[in-house]
Length: 115
Ligand SMILES: [Cu+2]
Image 1 (cartoon, rainbow, N blue to C red):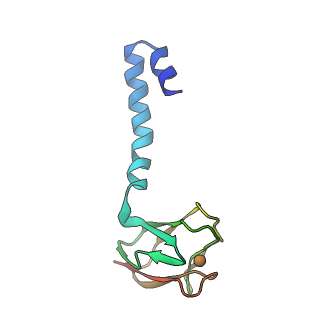
Image 2: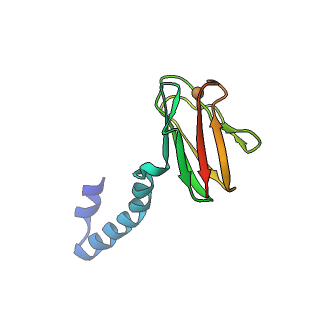
C-alpha cells in the first residue's frame, strides 16, 4: 500500500504524503515504545512490581500470559477481563500510592506511585 501511494504521484505529492504519514505514525510509535509506562502481566505477576508516574499519565498493562487477567485498585477502578495478548490502558488521575491487583489471581499485586 505504501509503495503504491508513493509511486503514484509526482515528487511534490510524494513529499506531502510522506509528511502526513509520519505525522500520523510517529506519536503512536513513541507511545508504544515507552517502557516506563508499560507493565506486563506474566506468570501470574506484574512486572515491574513498582512504577512511579506523574498524575494524568497512562500505564499500559499487557497480558502476556495464556489466560485472562484484569486490574483493579480498590475504590478507584475495576477493569474488564482481558484475553491473552490484549492491553489495558489505565490513566491515573489522582496522586498517591496505589496497590494494583487482579481479581482472578489474588496473589498478583504491584505498587503505582502517582506524583
Ligand atoms: Cu490475573
